Picture 1 (cartoon, rainbow, N blue to C red):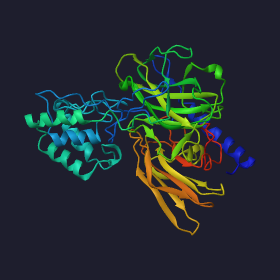
Picture 2 (cartoon, helix red, strand yellow; picture 1 turned 180 degrees about the vertical axis):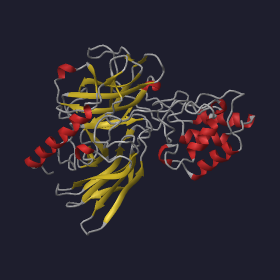
Picture 3 (cartoon, rainbow, N blue to C red; picture 1 turned 30 degrees about the vertical axis):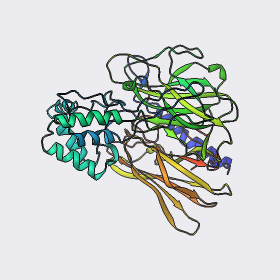
Length: 490
């Protein structure tokens, strides 16, 4: 694991410190509740669209664990007068109801669960029905729904044929099929507790005291709140999975769990932030965003956790209900004694924070920016998964391994939508031999009238390819980050 040359570190910090100062100067807008708006730590502001399949799962047993609710507002039972054709209902469960469930989440403007949901005027284009707008978005080549076009040809054909036929209601037979289908839906995609696991909850709360369970009052609009917790697990623990017991899906957009170098005296407190960890020497451990799922490590892997100190749980709240709302969601981290599994995994930030210096990416231009991470650990590194992140202008993420034999191998290439932040498991896993490098490239389409630099605001941009790999920390080289994280490599 290499260490940064002091001159490079200083150059990076001085140059990009200017960018950060310029970027943050315009980010401190507040809503009526006095909390920052139009800021984006790692997720994104804006309404979420239909997302891909997969519900959250059950995390329970041991410690203070409980049940993790589905990440979608799970489909309620259809009424006798409101069925969808059975094949249509199945396609919607698979592709749309992660965000457009009975309780829409992440700013999604409506449910797509019942027949009547499609006959209403569309929120964004009231002169069209939801069905008419849905057909347009399904076939939009630039910004499709589901985001990134992650729908099978068969499901796309099913929905297109139904919508083209005028979106007819289902029959009595369809009603029975829908009811059976919904009864068969699992509580979630994460397995129940395994022998030897202990699970811990870190709950959103309102009072500034350790152990408080009072629901946090989420003001209208959006903001970022950081909740601080003393590490609850014993030293020598590793994580096997993480998720959340969602309380009020209508006001949640994403969460991120960091280590923190701040004093443990902050245990139980929380504060409103704009989305950077500068000065905290933090490391990102885990996270979830609209469109994503809970994460379960493979049976031969465990995630490295801090032995002691403080944790920082950052939430992006998105309350579009029009009134303050309560939320008492806990995230759940399930653990085993370190060494229970053979491979210890950690997260590394790949990508770049350099978008043409302080000038940013040019206006009205498509551009790409890359960062290269070397394996100078002296041993092979295995990358299990990727979690790409950009903002509104991000269109595509790719990662290419430059092999020692001179070949370039594309190991990741996915369209990106900031409302659909998916964690991708590599199959086969990516093995980076000593001396090889991995270059991660973000493609942007700057449709605005001005240059867009790096920054935490939704009017700025980011280019991160989060990677889970083992051996833990072998991929990190600690090059300075404007966000303040230390587990970086570029």
